[in-house]
Amino acid sequence: MESKQQPDTARRVGTTCVVFAAGTYFDTPLSIPGDAFVVAADGGLDHARELGIHADAVIGDFDSIAGPIPEQSGTIRLPEEKDDPDLLSALKVGWSQGARTFYIYGALGGRVDHSIANIQILARLAAHGGIGYLFGDGTVVTAIADGSLSFPADAATRGAGRMVSVFSHSDRSTNVTEQGLKYQLDHATMLNTTIQGVSNEFLTATPAFISVGSGTLVVTFPIEAGLPRVERHHVFTGDLGTLSTAVSAALATPRQH
Image (cartoon, rainbow, N blue to C red; front, top):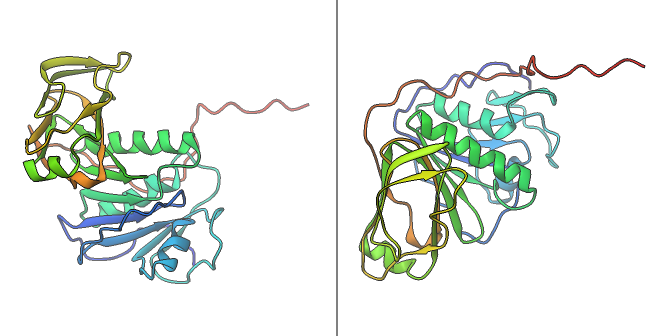
């Protein structure tokens, strides 16, 4: 049942990875491409089972799972005490299979600290040229680094009047452009300590475009708009790293009484 290695499956470069996390699920219809690599993170396996979806890999410390832990080659059991959260470990497994696009369910709602951590994970993906989508209650959250998101006119119409918000995750994001929205920016600079992009709106029958020249943006948009076309301004290097069960050396050792 236990394995410290990532699943020995042939890489499928360009594959989408669908991740089931252990958080809140909404009435949002699931989008699972036919060739998707599916990973269940801990209690996310309970949701996958309920939906009748087979997980190619299962990973976690299994502190939130209700059903039995599967005895399959793709099961990776992690210790409870570690730096990497189970969701990040799940994304590392998907990345190792060639995935660079990640649909993530059950990672918003519930505990706010988990939601913040999961948005930080999106920024980590973006920093290496990947992209992840957190599906919430009618809203999708994503992050883009040194690149752009484009929504066609029909998608914008489906989401017309709904909120689109843009935040700088980086200390400083430069050359930020927002076109085809109610409030537009042209080559602006955004900081992560100022709020300039909250509560914007799609317009009817108008293509929308959000771009950042240098830096990482966190973007939220209505699920009705569908997923955007993603373009990047340069080639990214590096990866999410290997699976790790390390505990930070900076962690203070409790005093002995």
